[in-house]
Figure 1 (cartoon, one colour):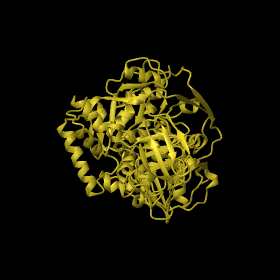
Figure 2 (cartoon, one colour):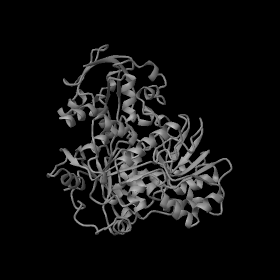
Figure 3 (cartoon, one colour):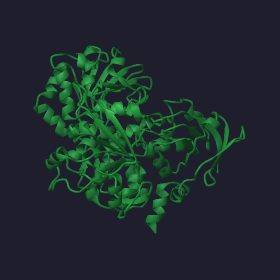
Length: 162
Length: 415
């Protein structure tokens, strides 16, 4: 279950917008977070609150394989990304760094700043201001498991240690 | 069975169907500078050794020579890991861009399952490999286990027909296709490039299309091996035994589309999306500040040759900075031997060392606020090559060279 406010974006938000290439020589999550979404929404990094949720249109995260993109969002406090569709590498990267991703066409239900409640295992997303809700198919169990363990690193650590 | 089904059946040890999620054994795993991030995750998961050092390639190309102290330090860390782990396939900063160097050094063969921690890993599809990009943490898991989960993708077969006109190249074909299908038009799918236009293309030209498959969301972008593939590989793969077996050319794909490119004009992808494509004639006359020739898309010998042929007898416009980045050391040496580099430099080009150059906005020619660049690279996203208020237009080597001469976007057919 996640609760927060919505940051709404359109279609084809690419990884260069999420974290520009000029910051990629740094692998520190906190420094990356300071530049998250900088070229599309300069106010984002300084205003986002822990648990806030990004709601977007088609093809979110298209472009590069840079894992710094979901890392920057997660470190900035983003609790989940909800989009009508995702670029495949970004989608995998989110799960691998432990940032929940939800395939759901919910952009029309929200404006930036709306309060949102997201239940990953039940597959529901609700706008607490308007009262509207939408359903989505929960992730396959093995991906939910990776997310629940906090990402691929703890998941693998657990399995390699056995 | 389709190409994707065949490769993933072999790699997972069972007969697969489209939509299945399989655990597949990887034949080759490539990573570049982000090996530093891979290495951090690899250590954190408690992995002791790389599953098969012969199947791992590490190489530096994104920021070479090191552009900042941070880069120098992460290079040093990966370099010493590669040495201590005894990795036989570590290439330091001198070789060039991964997507050119891996095929050149004979690491890529038809039918392989290849993953790379770079989105343009789709390039190796030009040689008939199923090849796709993943993130750094997932690469750490591949280093540890040699395996990865994958969903068996639908196949989208593109039949491309027609003889390309003068100064129209595979870059124009793929930009045209991306413009038509859209930035997510091939999402999650394995794209197959077929038809007589593809048959007539060199391996370098096919690499341009496989490379840019990711710009329409594809998981892989493949060209079926033929005589051209065979002779290309024979010169590079030790003990090459020729192309064998059916890779699924005759299978029925889930989707198909046809393109007739006989009358195709040179294409330009306008800011700030790769699918924002038009004929060059629609943007002719747009003033530019910089032109870039290079990258894993168009930094190969035939690209340098094409640009040199356009530039010969002309000079770069005085208001334009023309940056040339050969894709690899091999290409750099061959272009030097043939006099191409001297000719480009005489025309006013600045030639930098093989690598990714300014393509991803790391170094070697970033754009100031409000500047415009025309480039043979693969992405024109806002902020990609420098300032977020700069603009990047994508085009072929011919169009970039013609534009460098005129100082404005120009049609290479009418120079």
